[in-house]
Image (cartoon, rainbow, N blue to C red):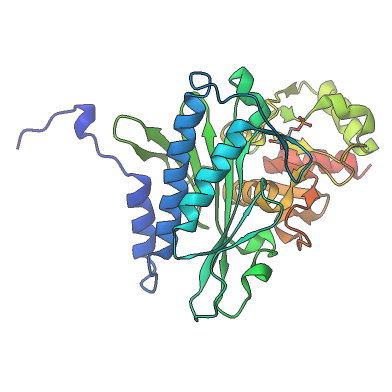
Length: 333
Ligand code: P6P
């Protein structure tokens, strides 16, 4: 049989095939989870298209509102949020949705019909203040299961270790999805020529070390003393600094190249700025699944934090195990 080495005939595994192969490993699976994952992927394609045309269609800039976080909503924050709410609401398997842009969770299916369903939480467009300067922005998502007996409203506040899946989509030089379904981390790139996310890496492992830290040093004076000690130590030991101001971009670099990302407590955000449920938890699951560490504080795994409110914040130290340990060593004094 004649074969070509044309890119058109190269073997590819799409996200859909990847999800269905995972489903096939669970004979009792109903396909509900795969269908939800396809909703996230479909939303990401639409958001990517909107982000890439933003300047052309004049949908940059502020929407003129502030969200529940007290942050100025960008027009694309609203667009991305609406795309995700619309797409996920159509999935029978979604019981409740929580979004950074919605003050209250959206209860979709609360009837006690004996069906177990899922909760989907997301930051629809993380780092959206980068949009106007064509910087890194992304979507972060977390998926929890909800058994039939648990009321939908109560099913959201589960610790991150109960996530069944987590991931992000980075709308950068290419549109990249990084995903874990609880057995390792896989990476997909959107191939616009076929409209599919194609798997480009399986079983990502975060490099054990990299002399690079990532945090907003403008807040240095109001960091707890241990973080200031860490910065002095790192700068005396040849560390470099990288910070793009969007968690998705900074975590993606740490996941691929190693290092440590932090958002410590500050005077303005004494509990940390990042949201536990749809920023810290999904990123922590990815980092741990890739062999790294993710702490809210020394000795406090992010994934063990018992949430009390859907928009609660936490401080974050995550990345290569040795690099997280180096931060903790300075915090311990
Ligand atoms: P700062 C974006 O607004 C965000 O929520 C994260 O994506 C990012 O890591 C952080 O806030 C940046 O915060 O205070 O450094 O601008």
